[in-house]
Length: 200
Image (cartoon, rainbow, N blue to C red; front, top):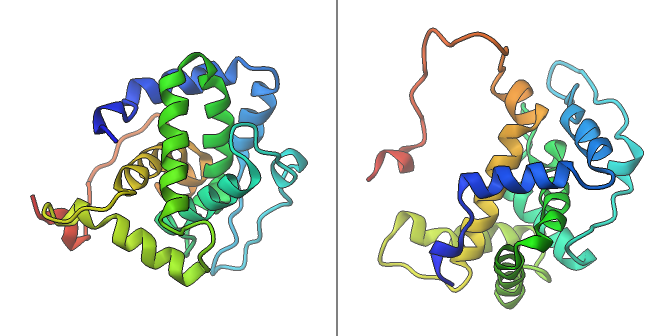
């Protein structure tokens, strides 16, 4: 798969705007933006019940198997710990809802269909939770080792890109995790503590 087909940040914003204009867009984004308002954490707080349309969400772009696989993949990339993860941010829901707006952009749909085929062929759909984590680790290897290859690496890149966008646009990512205060600024910017990100 040609990595030039991966959407740009502008493409992601355009898709989000198009999805917001769809029938049901206001309801989806209104509820999605409030998700994870009170993430269950070590301090004993518990999250309120999910809105029914998120709890009973029916995929609009993916079939059930692909949606379940996508959901699992997003949660491996951004797991839940003492702060919310992709599950609380409903990243898979966001990706699916936004992709239904891509019917005017066949290239986007084609890339995503190819990504899900690659995951299926890699055995991700049928693997158990531990094996899925191991598969994601192997798929991501080319990110750290330029001599490594994996046929599903482009799927990993695509999902990671959209998952990151979805998470840090959500309340769970922006407010609950980053503690974004709105119209303010940070006095200090702590350095990244991931050793693998210090290698060029």
